[in-house]
Image (cartoon, rainbow, N blue to C red; front, top):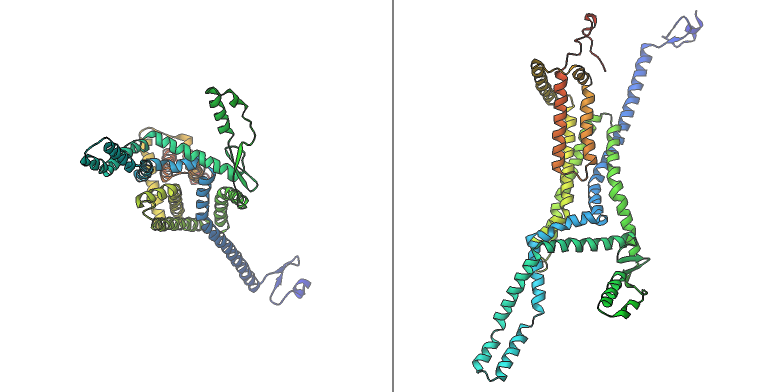
Length: 454
């Protein structure tokens, strides 16, 4: 008896070189263990992908809000762009006109004017009826003053000068607060330790120049010392500056982290295409929830503002103006997510997806055939496009996605434009590929059935 056979397990066989053959039972056990290991690996990947997906969906709305707040707080230009429309809003203009008119009219003591007029008339021997008539002018004169003042205030508030002054004032105020929060030395408002100071150097210089120009030569000797005024001291200034630094980190890093988690979720999942669909639909759902939350917050805000403090239409205009960029970004994310899910679906094996792809191929093939019949041939270019069809599709879609990533705050209109351009490029390349020679046109007869792999 062969030693290898003798030393083998019961039911096993040995080859001539002494190696033992695996029995059918052992092979079945090996396959069972392999399937179990594969299943455990797939479950582990699925669990990791699910965790990454949950983090993505949790951070997606937070990333939008953090980016919006970061733009409003740390970007003066963005903030001015946000508040600029308020100067032209009729509801806000009416509030400003009413407040300014009331303040100006309050400075005019109409009753004192009529009392003085009545006294002068009485002192000059005017009849009592005339004196009483002068005293009765308080109401009509006050109404006339109010009308004249409101007319002139309206002309100012509705003019371009008011809009320019509004933008300039908001720009200067935002820059001053930003310098204070970031600790920068530029600007009149400065922060040092727990103290906020107002630098009057520019004012001192202007006063000195104007006094000298007016003939007060000794004003040139005004000293440059004590050019700052302490506004207030607070232990929370350092906390505000720390919050500003954190906001700068979150406003930039949180969107990048969210996108990275989404990519990792797709890469980790066993079925990449399905995970792309799930992630895109999940992000779209969070965008819808954020839009609903904005509507709820808007209602709560309007209910909390007394009408005596701010009319409802003006309060609504202010809220809508401030959150319009956040709302636009959320809508853009919703559209992009739905388009991503639709694209992943069309790449799938479902009957609907196959039907759409077949319809697209029939249309581009018919257009390419029409070009060939018209004498237009794309030659090697068309053949290359036909062989590398998957590459051209991937590059076209990737270029569209990159364009949206590099676009500075894309809107829904920008997404629609990129989508149209991508569809045009895909259709054009497919037609050009169909207008080229068949892939096997120049192959030898023995290789006519082969297809180049590229």
